Image (cartoon, rainbow, N blue to C red):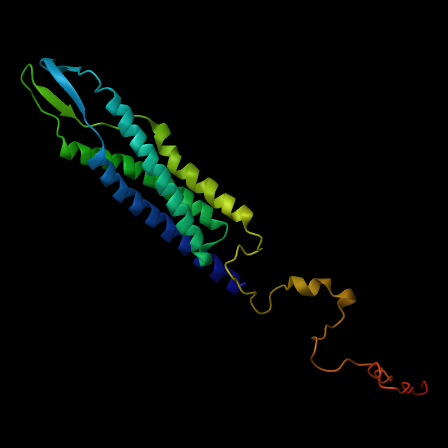
Amino acid sequence: MQALRSGLRNEARAAAVIALAVVLVSAVVGVGWGLLAPTEQLFVVEPGRGAVLTGESVHQFDAVAMFVCLAAVVGLLTAVAAWRWRAARGPLLPIGLLLGSLVGAVVMARLGEQVAEWAHPRPDDPPLGQIVELPTEVGTWLALIVQPLIASLLVLFLAALNSSEDLGNNTAVPAGSFDPAGAFAPYGAASYPAGGAPMPYRGYEPAPEAGSGSMPETRPRR
């Protein structure tokens, strides 16, 4: 029982580390997206109002598409990296990865929009006839589900492909715990290691090796 609690504690700690690492990676990628996301140019036609220039409206779609692609890559790489950590494989791994990806997607969007706002600040009162650049935004919550969706599906797919019962984390069976191999011994009979101590024959000598040329000797039954 103590070993089981220790194993669960270690697995929960590993899941928390994975979730935190995913959030940190998402934050770094969000900063990169905020710097690379295209801006939208407007022509000031009157105070507080601007007209979108021809072809500039597609930049909003471009920014969202870049965010979705980056989120998909982050979800893919973080799932593979988490699965490579053999000691963390278990039922808590998908939970930690899912929570980290959900929080990471939100952090990526919010931090990226803030960085884009810092890189391209909105003018307070631009004069008429001036062209201003406005930072783009994610705009839709559907883009936030890409990262957790891909990460969760990939780690579940990898777990389904793994044929090992412990998912390959090499978890040793603690002393005094249930041994599934011993459950198949007939009627609780003791097992003897192959090639080890001689088998008991209960009053009979073992038969000689084939080709020895002598008949096996028998002893009278007592």
